[in-house]
Image (tube, rainbow, N blue to C red):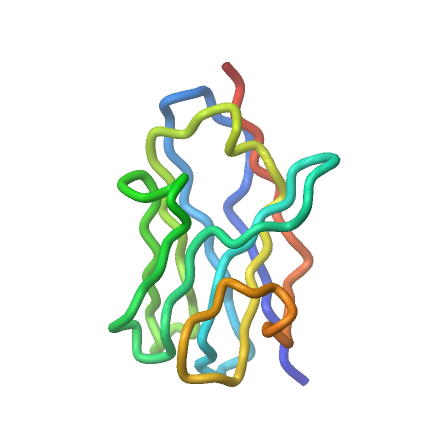
Length: 121
């Protein structure tokens, strides 16, 4: 059974930083982070290939967020810097048994339970 477990969310002031972690069940998937704010649809934030060589970012996080992975630890990270109030959301880690990153939510098969990130202004 595939499991993804997120951690690292919390409350931070605007301009601050957080690092989210996602531990997978030992398999290396193409992995992505999505987020969902209250009353809004879940949206793609960043993705990384199984090897970690290829990454992709939503325009609204480019230059602020960095996705990375350590396959020895079966962990994917999302380093979030220069946080703004609009980044407040539940962040979900997701994986797909595919070679390329996709921004399409329906292409991802496995989901974590989510971790809350709240940015105070």
